Amino acid sequence: MNNHITLSQLNGDIKEALSDAFEQSIWVVAEIAELKVNRNGHCYIELVEKDEVTDQILARARATIWAFTYRMIKPYFESTTGQTLTSGLKVLIAVSVEFHEVYGFSLNIKDLDPTYTLGDMAQKRQAVINQLKEDGVFDMNKELELTELPQRLAIISSPTAAGYEDFVNQLTSSGNRFQFEYQLFPATMQGDQAVESIILALEHVFAREDEFDALIIIRGGGAQLDLYCFDNYDLAYHVAQIPIPVLTGIGHEKDDSVVDMVAHTRLKTPTAVATFLIDRYTEAEDKLLYLQDSFVQLVNNFLSTEQVRLQQNARLFAPSVKRLLTQSSHQLQNCAHQLEKHTRTFVNQQHHRIDTAKNDLDYLSQRVVNRNRQNLKHIAQELKLQLKNTLRQQENKLEMLDRTRKLLDPQQILKRGYSITFHNGKLVKDIHLLKKGDEITTQVENGEVTSTIK
Image 1 (cartoon, rainbow, N blue to C red):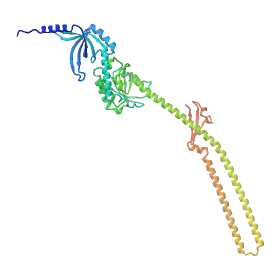
Image 2: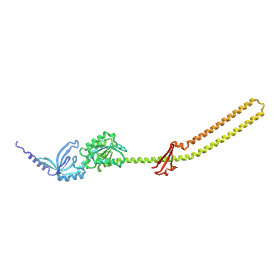
Image 3: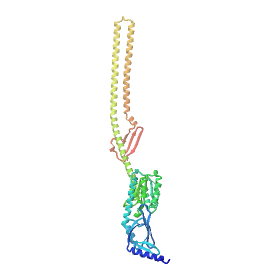
Image 4: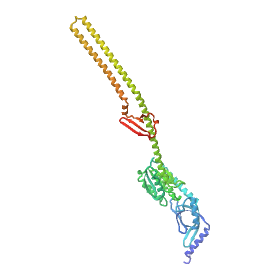
């Protein structure tokens, strides 16, 4: 078979055909699958195109950015997008088609449009947000109640990250009076392994959810692309559904990441997260101090009012009891005097009647005389009994008055739980006459208590 050509001739024909077909640069959309820069500054890239539904690779090509071009393209792209030019990005590039007889087909990248990459990333980010909302999980973590004083903290971070160290230093600084319990669940916070590593840490936290009041996700600042993993759907989905309030301090102040959006509370930096926790304790402490001061003031006001009332009642009670006792004593004496007078008169009258009857009725028999004598004895006994009853009633009345006097005695009132306060030996009647540092003595039923006003 004489109709044949060599491989070099075939490759030469392909090279010539491609040169004729693609004389000028072409703008191509592709995803960077792999990117390497050698020591000479040349950048070697593997480009792919993927099916947007199945993520299957539809096309693949090698590409090169020569050192001179790479030194211009790279800083322009990164300053415009805030992203590092690396794998995983979808780019719009101007390429020339190259074919080498030995090395085969490749593309030579001559320019790159950073605005396309920004739009693609924003589009993907919005698609993730829309999917989370459609799945009904976007606000799940926000709906959890963060306890007023979260003390038991689970932390997902790189153990060597400066952000983690800043968080711990702020939380445990000497100026912080509050004690927190925290445990680190280490994870890779950037790069290709970040999403898988953080999700694994989330699963470990979930297995111990009852042990923690809040979950802290923190990392220090970095390039925007280093934070690209926090826009990942799977990671945001896990964060949204974990049944512990999530606080983020991912360390960037521009746009919120999707993880920031689904978290319970988003804060700018790891230090800001620690400050947020400390501030909650400070506010609670201030509230308690205010309530304490209000309660003490209320109690002091109540005690002062009751003390004034007690003193007023004591001043009114003593004269009233004395006056009542004096009146009762006078009444008793008058009753006794009147009783004695009437008894004597009555007895005298009876004696006179008897004498008269004896003189006028000598003829009456001794029986009648005896009967009259018995009647006289009976009357005397009745008078004596009436006198005893009257005296007993008056004694009972005096005993009742005496018991009333004892019940209203100040010493008895102290036994019921009241107290009397003195300052410099004088009775305290007005709290405004006292000041901080004064020493007061409070008298209770079984002794005295000395206090200093603070």
